[in-house]
Length: 436
Image (cartoon, rainbow, N blue to C red; front, top):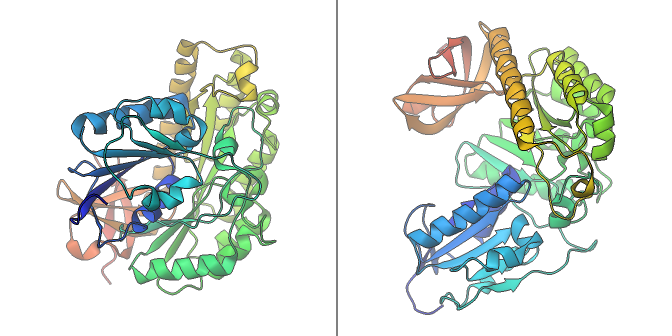
């Protein structure tokens, strides 16, 4: 360090829940006697920016965030890490004002790279090639008293033709169940009520250790203090009957499934190199609906993949329209450098991708309204947030319906039984508290 006073350090995270878990872990690696963490947006001596590169839009947002922070604090030390930094470190290093760029493995030694935080004339890059021997970097988020993101898996062995994440994250790997139980207990000690299990390919948990996600869940529900578990996302081919059964039988596991689909057309799924076809996806969704009738089920969809014609899109739309889904996450196809999809013929014009995205987003809104109406009058349990906004307190039901209620401080951070009423003007559901 250049002087004896504490350095103020701020963190800015872009992208997925996994990134947020890792940023929180990075923050805890800085000795509190030497560094004072301040909120993102406040004046700091050091800014750490954890990036995402899943789409071209994500890349642009990362560059914009870096430039915005540099403009606001031109004398601050700027370090950039994350997936974008692993795949294209030179692009980030070329931004005037960036001092340090760290790759996937190097970021977990970030405190060691910040012994000297004087401004550089040009950015230093520390980024090595990923290998099969890369270890698992343990991470969970802390500081939010409502929920914590617990990283249970990293990397991906899939080879989807559009995706760069395996290049940025490496091979699929995970820690053992016992280690994750210890981390869950540490989270519980902080007063957190809900843990969200996250990873690059969460359903692949156990590949490194001969275990399974279902086995992990069976052990996690025994951890005292944690009232709710939520799975961030599971590939349809990894969403086993056993996993659905434990989610149905165990009240601490939330009835909420997010399942990447990407296309409802088998021809496009083959071009994407996905490991299933649409009938398997439909079977998984229907199995969940039968086992857990009011389960929230969401899906990711990519529109405008190279070669997707009007008939292919119509097939996807009809497929989604006829499934009991509660929402969609819609992504226009984004060409990523170095992927097989980059070389595919039949590029879909931007205007057409936008039109198809709009149609699916409208379908998603319709599905969400229908799902909320199905829950009207039902009893549920809500975990309330700690944030007060416009005189209201907000929270989520187990099946991922956002609700609101006039602010009561005693509700914050608690799980309460409620009855779901009609929709509010803001689009959330009104509730009636069970005060008995």
